[in-house]
Image (tube, rainbow, N blue to C red; front, side, top):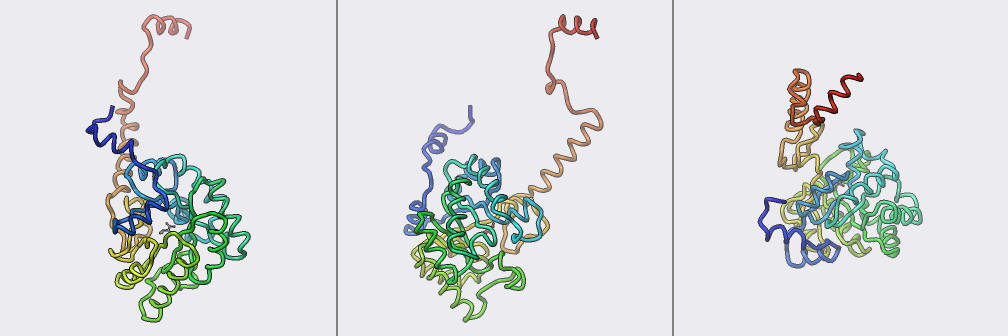
Length: 293
Ligand code: KIV
């Protein structure tokens, strides 16, 4: 039995599956869209239960889950493994799988096949890929295959070597104009939504306003149609590097670390397990056993 009031319980039960139509309607009625990353079953259960509209199985998992230095080495197989786990946990949120570096850049047919694997083998409902105008042919082909595509412009971590580091994009009039052109080209190619990452808020606001599809910001200010954060950043689970645009909603690392230390100390000094953590045995059975032991 849950301690929640009945209305809240039935609201939860009645919660509808989020689709691309849901997020499009939110854009049109100016209701903010929420998106978070998740990488496994238990985080997906929580994000879904929190009522988040979209879950992105982001390639950021390379860094926060697998300890890699960047996202470039991540493989299709690694992504699909995590996508399947997330899909088992999320029943309502719309599921987007991030196409890893070199799974879509070299060849359009290969990009379509790999996008298809996200749906067939990863149980995702859409894919995300990075890049602007240069990606439109690929996006058209994936969308033509019946797969919704989310674009991603601004700071695109898969091109980190080309960008010269994790830095804000669109800070000059020329760069901002190029980003707007890219966003409109992605919309024209058939994207259902676009992530705007690390872009000055005023530039992101103009791009959002010009687009008919939802713009989901990360480090792009409050005027985007929605916001996305990395699960580990929001919960304060990853302290190797935290971008300045992140708000930490919990100091999860400290909470978990303290629990682990408590466990270690209690086992060491004999406080765990206690009586309530052990299985009893009938006294006669125990005596009979002891005689034979
Ligand atoms: O991989 C990821 O987590 C992302 C988000 C930061 C948008 O691409």
